[in-house]
Image 1 (spheres, helix red, strand yellow):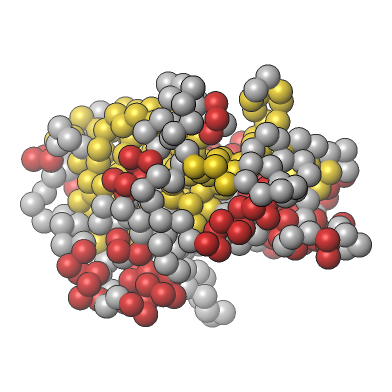
Image 2 (cartoon, one colour):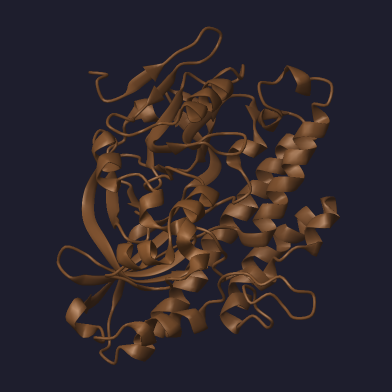
Length: 408
């Protein structure tokens, strides 16, 4: 097999780093961070790095970290189970109203989004009284949540039930898109919300406490880990699995509410088909690679087993892709989770103006105010270059462009 599809980064005393980044910029800080992770003694074979790679907290976003006998909670991060869901409808572009602002408000009313922190009133990004639909999904999560909170009572004081079926902030979004045949799709991006964030933080702190004596020897304190067989290792895997399930349910509730909002605006009856899987891109799970069972942490990467469907979104003004995995074993059967940022949110807010945002999203019905400048398309890598760099990992099945975008 030719290895001309990835670049190899190697340093003494560390596992090799295989990077699918031909033709895509990679910041030097991200390379250093990758090499730090590769030094950990329990890395299995090599790290695989996706073309949307950029500096993260603790571990690099866009990296696939296979481990044996240990797990790094900060590598999974705090938006546990963050991912995408997409549904194709039988509607065509012509079935949508000419003015899409009504559709955007219907979606904004159907799904709590954003965040308002004030002591007097509740946060607009959570439910005051969750609808019945949320109750049905929460019922399947509640018993395992009780097991977790019995062991870790501080997880009770989190937004859990109130956040199920809500979008959140930052790069989380709900979009109505058109594919190459002008068919209407609904796609959304969110994770395990407040409770997942709390679980991530509790275990990152525990890992750092457990390793107090050795933390100075780590390349980065955020690489603190749990060893297999320790109490916190098993508890963490249980908690992470629960948060990942919460994230999946969260996306399902929102999708059903967005489709209901769409049918309240579009009078024509339509059918839906869940073509693209409800897929995580910040998570950890047991998988078999090179004939051995390992834990695979994907931090900003999507599973791309042979024939498996996935979603790679662009930024709010760029294309998105529904893809099919090629099962490339060298990448631990993974692909990128998006375009990847080229600059921090702070840098984007300094560099661009509301006018830039209006121009860049001229074709999209979305917010165009100073609060969303950090999500401007120019703060992201070129999605076409990102897709070209991973041609050996996935094939494109559909290309989508958004016409409505709801941001948190």
